[in-house]
Image 1 (cartoon, rainbow, N blue to C red):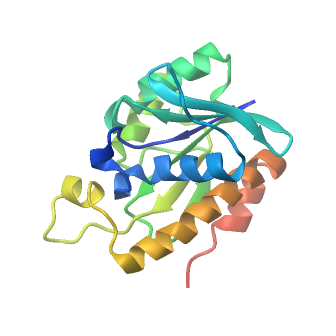
Image 2 (cartoon, rainbow, N blue to C red; image 1 turned 180 degrees about the vertical axis):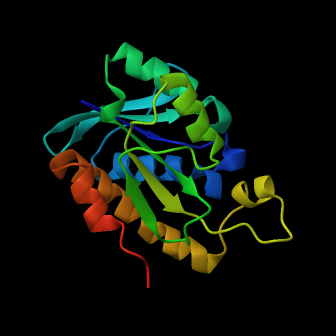
Image 3 (tube, one colour; image 1 turned 90 degrees about the horizontal axis):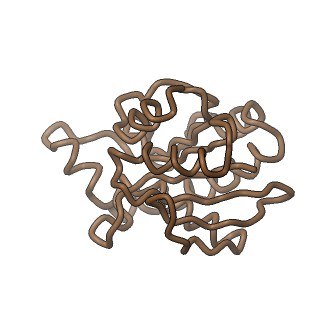
Length: 189
């Protein structure tokens, strides 16, 4: 069984912001695979279902981004799941809008949600899918950038990235992280 967690902030105030791309991908997965993400448990919204032949639990932590690891740790402990069977989906400002990058492990790269997950799980060894949201403009505060919404052009690119992230999840489950990295980590032209 895999735990698939998308990172974001709860409440309608943050819907569809750059920082909530992880939540948006969970919503896309839920729609694609007919999984209701509506159970409140472990300080998260959860949904159980199947992706291909694999049992999954979709997770949207409700702890706010910087404490995402607390909720995810509770879910992993409850379902007795190893971090290697956790897939975390989140925004990345170092990738252009529309690009995704699959990794099998790694540092937080400055992302506070990932920092908290690494702290709570005491490991960096978990697969993740980063969704590009674009660099912060020089004149802008980072928080304002990640809590802002996409312009129309970037929004269309990110919609494509969300669809690719859904495909990347299915690829990880069916063929492993390495195969997903080979399939989805090509540079956008």
